[in-house]
Image (cartoon, rainbow, N blue to C red; front, side, top):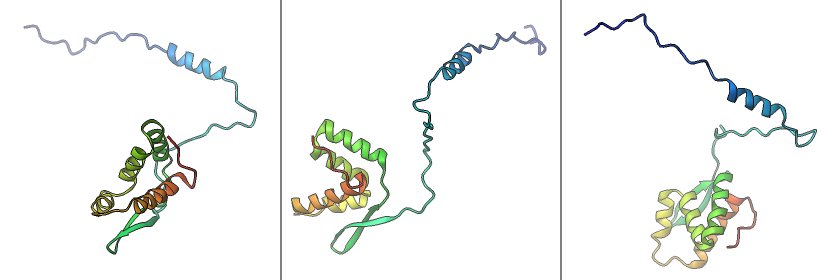
Length: 138
């Protein structure tokens, strides 16, 4: 068997800069939306501020809390569920996504949970999440 030649290397293909040049050219031809328009920079990083909790409901004296901070991404998903699946399924989806598993289990374990009590909890979560905006109607 012939020995491998360590000095032999494969010739590299010339680097393709065409796509980069085209992107740069496109960027140069973009007109601003307005003279005073500034691009909006978004971040996926969470705020470093300590999360503030709100006492949402109690079951037999045990308090359950949710975040007071608005999660706009969650609010957008809630609106989508409400408009595509209906408000009843959207409220269930919302409670499952906002409440902790322990809080959701406590709520669903109440043997004779009254519809008006559930409606109060759901309305409070909607208000926290949507910032007081009216919930979508399906």
